[in-house]
Length: 199
Image 1: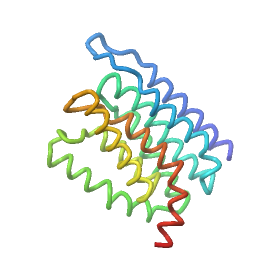
Image 2: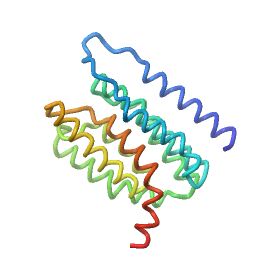
Image 3: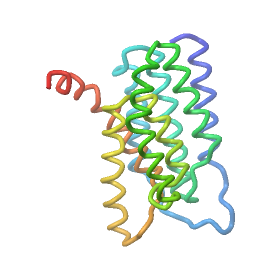
Image 4: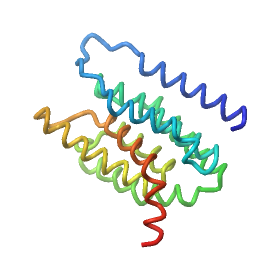
């Protein structure tokens, strides 16, 4: 990993650590910490250098996982996912795609997954899935591609359904569930690629 990539990764990790530690406003609802999803995401990030093909690919995925861990923690406490975490993450993922010559797969994933979900959010006026979630999903699809993005969203949706049923709630913070889905996708996705390519 080059010194520039390492320095950028450290700076991004510091920024996300600061985001997690932001104090809550007095009116915010206190919620139980999402230890499970956050632990899974951190564990998957630790494995990134071993399961990614290049250091640049690892940097792009680490940026997205770091964003999901931080925004998942904040979303669990406040119910919001903030632009100053999701938009830089999307920019980093896009820059990595350009640097590695994988713009075409990233664009394919964005248009086949990100755009339909964005259209769904627009049609439902943000009641089915919030705009902060959509911006986080854009980072996911650019960094992960079609297969792992779909796996991320499937796992996140199933986890969210179980969470909502357990609480008897009509709405839940989706950020921690995306962190969990991304962690599982990063760990399992490379194992699925050969199977899908054979099929």
